[in-house]
Length: 256
Image: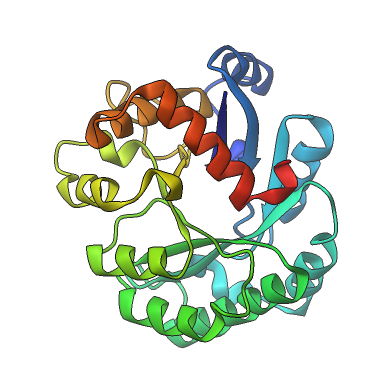
């Protein structure tokens, strides 16, 4: 059994969704979390979870779209937090690589959404890129109040940040990046992360793992991520899958 902890089902275009769902099941994936990122897709990911029993969802505004955050999104995320299939607040965080939203706005919106997670007793799904110090500073302020913690997804940051978030009780999410030849830094992050703190994800349709690079990514490629992590950790694949399944159910308690 596998759980896909981070994908964007509403972005998948290469195949009909019913075909994707069939392949997901055949790959041994029993539950899928599709991620909210901007004001335009918050409703869509919820609708997908309403339609398909194996699909769960998050609600959050990505740092790229922080400038679009308003009271409407705040209320929507807060209100939906009580729904049984909303498993986390996310994808939230900081991204200083593109700076699609001003950094001060990103920080403010990140903090507001962390507060929702604290108030609603939900975990968070965090995106951080080239913003290690500000991510650490903000999480230090919230970590004791954020009882459910959550995951720093698609981890590509420094080992120092990895060690910090692990010490604060967060999980690290790894995807197809770990199969890339030039991803030594991410592979090293896998090696230092205890298996009890690892989550599998694809971030599809992005970051398709080897040997399928060039194709649209999809949740059914998750076994390639699991296999590479087992190789990097020098651990039996079934043992790893069993542990990461437990991790997923603990991190996202509503998956129960």
